[in-house]
Image 1 (cartoon, rainbow, N blue to C red):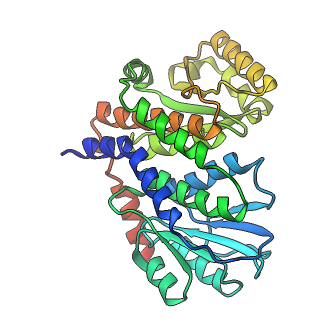
Image 2 (image 1 turned 135 degrees about the horizontal axis):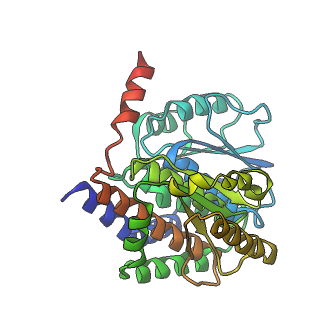
Length: 333
C-alpha cells in the first residue's frame, strides 16, 4: 500500500476513530478540578490545528478563558487554578516537553494527551492524567484524535452536552466518504503552478483555513497562505491591485451555509473584487447540517482530500517531511 493510499484510508476511517473515543470516555473517571482558566500546550499540524478548531467551536460555549501556547516557556498567569492540556502526538515535541515541565512547577491540573514517548513516561512518573492516543498516524492526520479527546475532557468540566453533535458528525463523515467529489479534479487543474491562498471566516472557517494551509504545505509540498475575513479587508485586499499576481496565485474561499449576514456580504464583495482584477477563486462549502461541529469536520474532510490529491498529482509522497526531520537533527547539535 502506498503512502497516498495509507493516508486516504486514515481519512476514511475517522468516523470509527471518533466512535472509539466516545466509548473510551464512557468509562473514564474524571477527578474534580477547580480552575479559572484553560491553557493548551502544543504545536504543529496536529495539536495546534486541534487547538485552533477547539477555540472556534468553544467560543460561545466556554465560560472560562482559553489560551494557546506553542513555545518553550509558560505564561506568567499559570498557577494552581489553571487547567492545562499538554498535547504532542509523538510525545517528543521539544517545545511541549519544555513547557509541560515548567507547568508542573505551578500546578498538577495537567492532562497529557499523547500516543507515547517522553510525555507518556513523564505523565506516569508524576501521576498526571494521561490520555493515550491511538497509534499509527502522521501527527497532522491525528487531528481528530486530539480534538475529540480534548473536547470530551472539556465537555465534562464545562458541563456541555455535545454528544448529539459528535454523533451527527460521525454520521456526516460516514455519508460523505462515499462521495467522489468530482470538483476536486477540476480544482487540481486550476491550482497547478500557482500558490494557494486560503480565506476563511471569523468563528467558523478561520481555523479550518489555517489547517488547510498546513496540509497543503506538508502533504502537497507547496508554499501557501491563509487569512481571515473580515481581517483580510483591512490591509491584504490591497495586494490584489497588482494584477500580475493573478497568474501566480489561486484563491480558496471557505464558506458556510450559516454565515453572519455581514460576513456573507464581505465574501460576495471579495468575489467581485477578485473577478475585477482577474484572480481565479473557488468556493468550498461544508455538508449542510444544523450542527456547527459537523460542518467544520465535513469541510476538513474535503480539504484534506484536496491536499492529498494535490500531492499525488504533483508526484510527491504526502508522508515525506524529511526537511523537518533534518531541521530536528540540526537542533539536537
